[in-house]
Each structure stands twice: as C-alpha cells, then as structure tokens.
Image 1 (cartoon, each protein chain N blue to C red):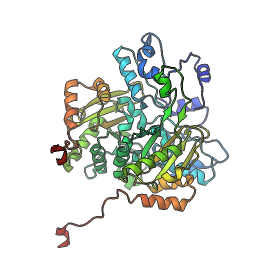
Image 2 (cartoon, rainbow over the protein chains, first blue to last red):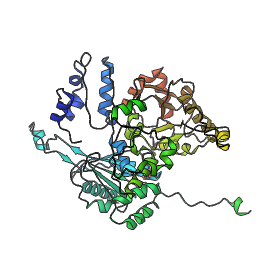
Image 3 (cartoon, rainbow over the protein chains, first blue to last red):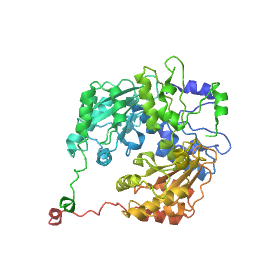
Image 4 (cartoon, rainbow over the protein chains, first blue to last red):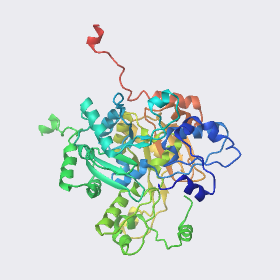
Length: 261
Length: 261
C-alpha cells in the first residue's frame, strides 16, 4: 500500500510505466505491443479481475494469441471482511460517485434496496478522481489536471442521506448502521461503525476509504466484532435492532386448519 | 497452491503446526498460548476473514490483549472473477454440502432464489471433508479418519438438480447456465461453462472445485469471456438467453392516465 514507482522498480529490477486510466481503457494495443515475445507484467492494485477493463485486456490478449498468466491478490472485495462482517452475507457491490450540483446519479439506490430486502450487507466503493480535467480545461483542450480527489466517509454518508431524502423509499434511513473502513491493509487502517448520520460527521483522515451498509441479517459474532469500532455499544446495538425492523418478513400467522386443532 | 508443510517450513525458516478443523474451532486457547510475548503467525488458505472461526480467533486474541496484524490474501471470494463474471454482479455466497440418503440440507435454495430474483450470480462453495470419522468409528470412539473427500462439479450439479426437482419452485432449472472452476490459482486451473445438466456429466479432475450459477444480468463482456469455456458457443448463448427469461421484470404497462392522453 505504501509502495511508489521507484520502490517497485527497485524491487522488481525492471522499468515500470505508470498506466493511467486513459492508457488502460484505450491503450490496450500499446500495453499488449510485443507482449507475445516479451514477458510483460500488468500490475494492478487489488485483484486483476476487479475491473471490467482488465477482463477486457485479457480477452484482447487472447485474441492476439498472447499467453496470459494471472497472479491473484487480495482485493477490497474480500479484504472488507476485516471489519468483521461475514463475506457470504454481502449482496451486490455498489459504487458511489462524487455528486455535482446538476449530476447526482442514484442507480445504486435500487441495488441497496435489493440487497437490504433480502437482509444482505452492501459494500460501497467510493469515487476516486485522478488525472481529471476541469470542464473548462477539457473544453479548451488544455491538458491541465485537477488535484486527485478521493471520496471520504463523511461525503459518502452525506450523499447517501441526500438520495434517501430525495427518493424517500426507505431503502435505508439516516439511522441505518454502517461501517467506515479507511486505509485497509495499511499500517494506519481504521474502522468506525455508526449510523449514516453519525458517519456524515466523521473525520476519516487520509484515503482510501470504503463503506459497508449493514443488512438485516447481523449475526452475534458480527455485532461483537463491530463493537470494537463504536463510541457507544448500547446505542449501536439499539440502532442495529431498530434498523432490522426494515424489510423484516411479516410475523408467522398459522393457517386456519391449525387453529381448529 | 502446491506448497506442503515441509516446503513452507523451509520457506519461513520456522516450525509449522498443522492446524486441523478441531484445533481451529475448539483450540483457540492453545493457538493463542504465549502469543502475547511471542510472534505467532496463523496461516490460512485464502483470506483470513473468509471463515467465521478466524474472526472469532481475532476477537479472542483482542480480549486477551494480544496484538493482531492481518495480511490479506486472494480468496475464492474475489479470485472467482477469473471466470470473467464481474464481482459486483454477485449476490450472497452459498455452500453446498455432501448429501447423504437421509440428509439433504437445502437452505441454499432460497438464497439462490433471492440472488436470481434480482439478477445476480451466485458463488457456490463445495464441501470438503478432511479428517472426518465414519459414524461407526465415531460411535465407538475410534480415532480412525476417512480419506479426504472434495466435492466435484458433477456431484454439485447433480445435487442442485435434485433439490430443484424436490422443490420445483424454479429458482433455477437443469438448463440454467453455470461455470465450473477447478484448481483456481494452480497451473492446471480450468474453467467450463455449460448448463447444470451438462455439468452434471463433466469430469472436473483433481480438486478443488467451485461453481458459479449465472444470474439474469449477464453483460456482453461477461458472455464474451465465457465463450472461451464452452463447447458450443451458439448453444450457450441460447441457453443464457432462455434462462434470462426467469425473474425478468414484467413488461411495462403504462398507467391508465397515460393511455387517456
């Protein structure tokens, strides 16, 4: 997590070309050039199959008859288990992008609803903006890039609350318990559990950050683990219990035949 | 994947104690003994947080004031992306255990139904029986263990079909497309895509095996990737299209107000 280009070059004893988003998404020919005769490694953060563009790159390599060998790695998709929530209790993963005044994409909302309807946790990946141009610079064709931005927990929680206020379909509420995960895998990694509202005021520090929204199915062991990351254990327990009322199956009513016995 | 105790001991330059299921599940005191003063590593296959017992072990360590550092690793939970299906399209993970004549647990069936209702893929983990006693040996208190058993793809597919035949709720059919993944991460890893029925006759070779059942949401890129693993591309494409009819949202019918415009 703490490696830079120089330390990686010295570690591998090889030259490394920094592949930005543009090169990865549109420059597959350049990446695959000579890879049929030379041993070229494409290094990624996390697991290579975590991104559609990487899957696409493998497909193109195979079309060109280039042999591909994959070395798997830990990914946020599984390392998220470090917060104590069990991986088999997660539903589909969603992504949250930076809202602007005029653009607040909320397709994630239905996915959270689907996950929570069946009691599952939702892993929420937060936007990263690296090497982005301002609209003005893009319009004028200036290759000037904005400073990198990484969505923090407070922004993510606020955006989630904003969409719930707009939609009001109760996919979640501002009292829904979530877990904030910061710098996972780094020595300074930290976890914080609380309601969305609490996390909307949480100072999560340096990036990268990820969030998990809890589903109804919270096992005792999961809860026990999360207690390490809360301010007030009793309050968190009550928040979880209250949130579990959402999407709860209706209580069992015996059929009439049983009643007549 | 190919390491054994000896090669690991020579690699780490440390003695390794083989921790069987019993030791991990009931012997946490033994594992944590002296770990407050000595540097003890608990090695696992996959990611440490993939199993509830490991989470429990971390909790016990913290209760005893033992500092724990986690080194994350690739896990089947994310490396499954190697089959070309996108990780963010997976629902909850299920486990399939070896059926006996009198014991055919099918709680997985409802979970597959839940995943497929919202269009998601399902990762299916297959049973592993290591160091198990026969009922007779257990009853007589003989510490004789059966040879290890690893569920193969044909058995898994057959058991899935068997439960669908019993339940008949159409969570899936014998024509539902699945992907068989064998020895993932090893040099001999292999993939096979086909219907459940086709996979029930598939010889998947040496363990370990995993399966994925497809959901309705299959992207073109995913399909393109899976074509590498099928016998008959056109048939597979048709099978996927046919299976996508299940759980399809009903066609849009405009409300009456709209009709009167």
